[in-house]
Image (cartoon, rainbow, N blue to C red; front, side, top):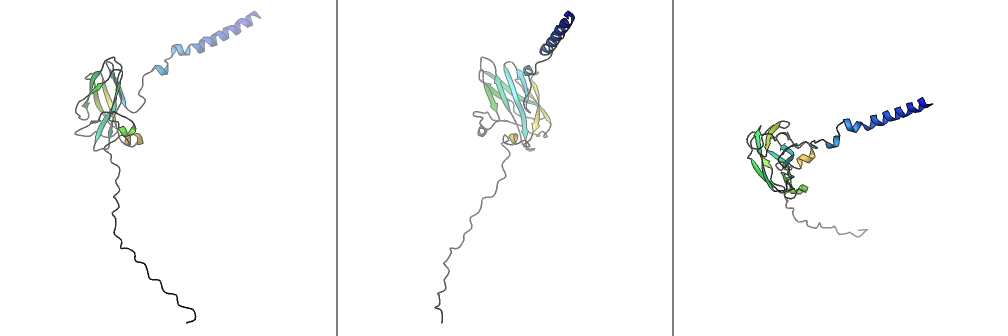
Length: 190
């Protein structure tokens, strides 16, 4: 009987240790950094570039994204296109413990968003990547994906895609209606 009790205790202890040890030996997924969207991200100092992507209609292209600052002081940073396209290096001032969006329209609720970075010269093909350097840091280089307006969310962010205009109706002058003469009733029996 004692051997049986010891066996049950041993099996219970093995199960307890085996199942409790799962979180000790494996990575906890909630602590892993990942990009939750199509955009790219990178870090430099206390600054973090998030959800950076290129939107293109084939003839025009812009870079949009966000920059956050974890620091206690305001910081100035820049974004520079280094490969696959050209654009003017753009500086951003990010408030302490703050965020700056660029390229997001106010109509979608992004109040205070900075203008998008406009790509110049040869526009990269949709589906390709361009290199973007963040904060003049050689280690903070992103390979940013070029997307189009296939996804409705991105179509709303593309300022250069004008909705198809329908021509305004041209008023046509119509002659004033003249009342038609009504025939007089003839008495019956005539």
